[in-house]
Image (tube, rainbow, N blue to C red; front, side):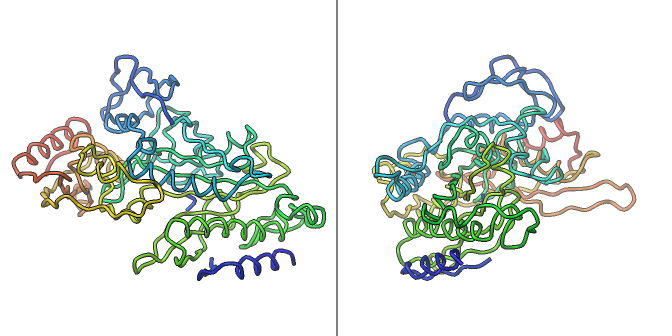
Length: 452
């Protein structure tokens, strides 16, 4: 079939070792425009909030913290000299150079990096076919503004709107927000890039073959591990080939022409088949991004009925930490000249390794308490947020090291180990203890826990 011939041509044309196997992964000030009103015991919320030029009305679902709201002001991926900006521009440069419109007139992919960060729940979840009971919908995972909106948890939240507006090929870049664990690789705000490409039959198969090979399957075809029920076998296979070729070229541009790349089967609600892309780099396989053939239901809901497409999503921090040897995600947010000066004169295509200024010792304290009557996972999310709000970037890592339920009373106890370390100076136990006691005090006041 055509797909098999194309697959053979693609593989034979590459000079690298590729293993085909079985994540997808703005601008404007954010500020409260009215005096905050008391909400739940856990936090205060503003009566209204302006972000990216939009005024929204928080309600009882609001679970943003002041520290997270402050991150909205930073726009790291747009700041020249920040490594996130460098890696973003390196990828954009690659796509602009490699993919051009007919006649080489202009870049094929439109770059969208000023999309609003408060999105509807439809855009963040439903438009991407996220199941109603999916863990990502929980308030312990997502920052909610009100019953209808949230901070975007991924750049995929803009796919539906952009396709409805008529965009066929685009890259979305921006900061995204999730309530997550705290360690050297996780932060409540991080940065993603989303890539989408749609094809008509002529664009996918070529004008000479567009009529011979159709995009869509007959009504009686079933979904299989290799294809969606809506797509023809040829369309699904050629889409997969073109997706893998595109991402292989991107990985070679980032990691070098001798890089080994493999595609591993994965599952995402919004693509099928789906893959994770791994690159063998400095002696180990690294997960770089997620991708797949877009679910046709997503295109149809956006009014696109005559095209098919693929999508990928990658984390800019993940790439920058690997390529620049940055050991701690907090460094991206540092305003220390010792860090920023190392990238100030660099170009996006420069290969550079960060040189640590100094290494300071850790200071850690344990925090143990009896929980109030509420789900354990919700309590953990609030504890992480509270610790981050009070300890700021002095908190390197937080881990739940012990959890048990008392047999007689039925009460549940949590013990968290909080590791404090500054990236630019040595901390004393005395100054850390002041912060730690404030965390304990606030935890008691806001969540009615009992310190053990």
